[in-house]
Amino acid sequence: MVVGLTGQTGAGKSTLTKVFADMGYAVIDADKVARTVAADPDVLLRLCAVFGDEILRPDGTLDRRLLAAKTFSDKEQLEKLNAVMNPPIIEKIEGQIRELQEAGEQKILLDAPTLFESGAQRLCDCKVSVLANPELRKERIMRRDGLSSKEAEDRMSAQHNDRFYILRSDYILRNNGSEQELLDQGRLIAKRMGSGADGGKKERGPGMNLLIWAAIILACIVVIGGAYKLMLHQMYPQKYEEIVSACAQEYNVDENLVYAVIKCESGFRPNVVSKADAKGLMQITEETFDWVNSKMPAGEKASYDEIFDPEVNIRYGTYLLSLLLTEFDSAENALTAYHAGWGNVKKWLQDERYSSDGTTLENIPFPTTSDYVDDVLQAQKAYQSLYS
Image 1 (cartoon, rainbow, N blue to C red):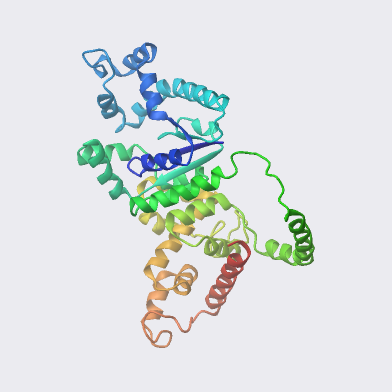
Image 2 (image 1 turned 60 degrees about the horizontal axis):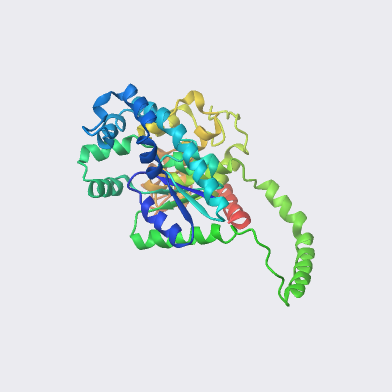
């Protein structure tokens, strides 16, 4: 098993590498490989041809800090650097993996800051990313590398946002708490993956035959209820799982709620258009899209022309849900606003006929909206029961 470990700078990847090493993983450090590659005369020659001789120190070795300053704040220059460095780095990593496998190592960790950008993920059986809040990362980078605030921000801006890693990883670890919390997460992940890495056959114990018969009996019971459960799965399908999971994690919304909204809004039909000209899986009008777009982080904005694209539609619908859940005190209020509009809910909460405390809607004046909220909440419970 080869596990690829990556993440944003300052997120805590080095700490996780130590955890995997302690759990018996042989570690390949892509940064060390890169330094070895950069010292190769042929590679140095190509780097000088692209970036000039000023990237060399007086002794002829590479000034890595100067090269970083030239590339981290300029994506075009960074692409040029990757074009020179990535092929020999990947080749050397492949060689190290072969050597470790031939030596009998069964668990290998590839610690690679640019795992996905370099294409090294193709060498891995499992991908793990560690992420953290930007302010925490900036503080850690400045303290670790002795960088100024501007240098740290330049380095961070050259990297991808959370969604990039979430969509491409098998496991995501969040390092926004203590180091001990990250260590605990890392040990759990390493143990979970390592437990199946040996591929060995375990000898059957004396009680195994009894367990096999118990399993057969249990299987018969399961078959009896299988048709009913199959029907429920057909009624409440999980489609676009990777997109829903990534967006729900990024915007801190319950996955089951996202599935429930998609089911009730479009029945998982990506190209449906309502009478109100709401479009796509989560039924978003152009006016709503423009409003959400004004709140969306700059690097994640899309065009309404892309609204039938499942990734765009689910991302905007989930982000809208997160805004509504933040604004209102309950999922019921947020869903009411999703269906009837933010302004209406604000108005109804101030009307004693609909809300006695200004925070809870005891009565929704639009019957279709009331039915919609009930349907979505019922679907959310069904998803929780079937899949959680």
